[in-house]
Image 1 (tube, rainbow, N blue to C red):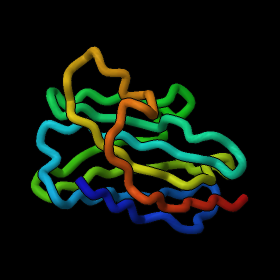
Image 2 (image 1 turned 90 degrees about the vertical axis):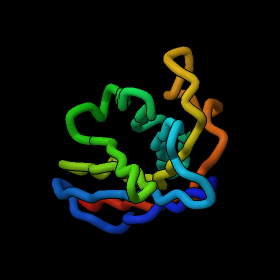
Image 3 (image 1 turned 90 degrees about the horizontal axis):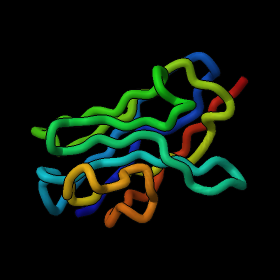
Image 4 (image 1 turned 135 degrees about the horizontal axis):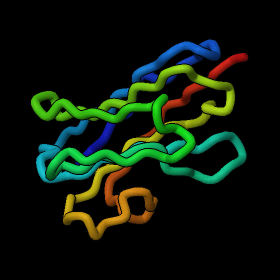
Length: 126
């Protein structure tokens, strides 16, 4: 699976942005998808994830209510809608995929994922 993240850019605080992650090479059917981010000088951290089976979603506690993950299976694409952006949301955002084996998986963990996109930079100005 090849993943291509896009949609990043420079945005003012309080505004919204939608990131896309397009997959090629294989259908995302049966794959759980995740979004992670890496702020400047910091480690990569979990943002959101979504299962294939049942569509259950997971969010970092600090981002609940502002960020929404969704997927369009017909387009083989996953999205991350980001609202009320803050300067601290500035980061490179990565999408990732892993086969959905079920609820025993820790989709908040970096090492759960087998495939990663190249990242897209989001810069939020104050």
